[in-house]
Image (cartoon, rainbow, N blue to C red; front, side):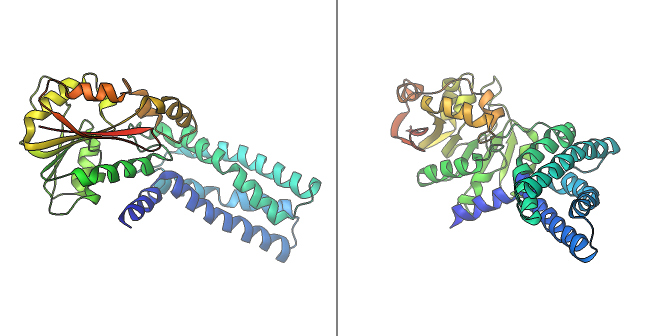
Length: 325
């Protein structure tokens, strides 16, 4: 139940979900106002629809600006770009509705429903990339793909049974793993991005977080742990063996290092999926290598770390390895 609850919560917080909810409001306004103007005031249906589309422009702009894309302020140039792009979509919208209604002979209300649904993806990506993204910082989180939250929670489920506190998570993001851990468990998260660390501190003030780049010359300023976790991280490291060698010094007796990483089999699927927005394109571009089972075992060889568990999951596209000192 916790898995599905968190999955729903994550997806509802996504910009495309907010855009979809705003689209439902637009749907309702489109249908009700068009029906009112056409049936009650006896205007030509296409004129009624045109008036409706123009009347919701301002509402749509401010909704998307402040809610969908979470901008703190709006600029006149953003509104001009938005109106320009919306005008293009309105023309396309009217032409398609007219085509379906007069040529295909679909009822005008059904035409509106079909055209609005058809144009939804184009509007979402058009507004995001051509209007609002100009003022939004690039998101390098691995959660930007449509399927990324599902895959992340799947990784969490695979590692939970092997976790014992205290816990150190490298590449903790905003601390999403904490939702699945016992509340009393001692946890420390480390991430290279300060904005993620800042957000994690806001969300989980009773846990410890640190902005730090692992693998450098500087010593990791933390104590010792029973579990050190690296989820979907080693493929981003330039020298993962050196990082593991450093991390083993922060393990308590019988402590373990838990790693998940994509298999080489996933490379083509991730590349194709990222082009369609299914997976994070930014994260994929930062991959240095894909690990076979043999190479993963070799990461621990000679470091006095014994592999106690290895298994593939996600239909062979991902893998987990657990090493113990």
